Length: 341
Ligand code: TXA
Ligand code: MG
Image (cartoon, rainbow, N blue to C red):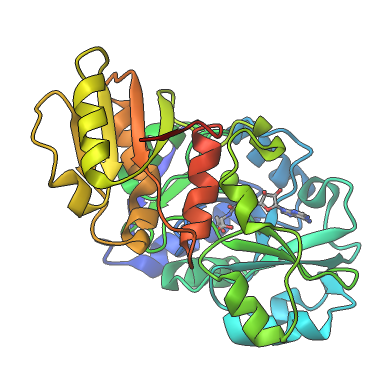
């Protein structure tokens, strides 16, 4: 398949490009588009056959349901039913933004979107170009993260083109994704208030708005090595990933020793990376804080993957705020492998 690639960052006639993307979507095709979390691989959510193509392009197991993206509340009206008071409050507070709400679906949602469940995930992205794209399509867009299944999600142009050229009709590139980790997924169906995936919108944010306790996701569990959730390979580069925890000086000593036997890389905060002066260690700094680490995690894992290393070490972060999402993805990428020095 020939893939048309546009860069919205440098595009003079965005409306023309979006009209073309809309034509492709309304003809049952696939368009990769930017969002504030990660890039999405979209199809018309109301077209069962178009949605099927997403699973083929990504090599995604077809029992994994998709999120439906909207650009206005009107678009959602006949897709969901029995919307709870909590859901309404959360939409008012966080839509548009990096939050997906799982709600009871209507019969308008086709089989391939929800795969047998009686619910559907709804998200309204805040990214300006995402919103313009969905708006111009005039239909809800079903989209998983735009990556081959099990691989890290994609947050920049270079890896989009590398991984998805030839697999979709159009790729709409843009600036790097601002948040860098996928949306918070919260089940608000059937009286639930249950966190299914942590993200930028934190448990504290949700509890503040609803005045209720969020269930379903034990913060401590995220850090448990080899817990049952780790059985799924996810977010993983080809190179082995290991989480490294400890005092920064001890981490540097450990890396210096192990780099005599193995080719290793380290991803960490600037304070750690600045302490490394051995040329044998491939080191990349995330920047100063966990927000920057989240923004860069996937692209730096992919970058390190090209260096033919034996192990990529990634510094453990605190689980506060978006740190919980960062550690959730990192523990999956490393399959729970953690070294404490
Ligand atoms: O930030 C994001 O959410 C990105 C961008 C593109 O919007 N999308 C994304 O989609 O991460 P995906 O398919 O890679 O992850 C969606 C997650 C999956 O873990 C899926 O199982 C879950 O949401 N999910 C979707 N619909 C669901 C449902 N009805 N019930 C429970 N989980 C659901
Ligand atoms: Mg994904």
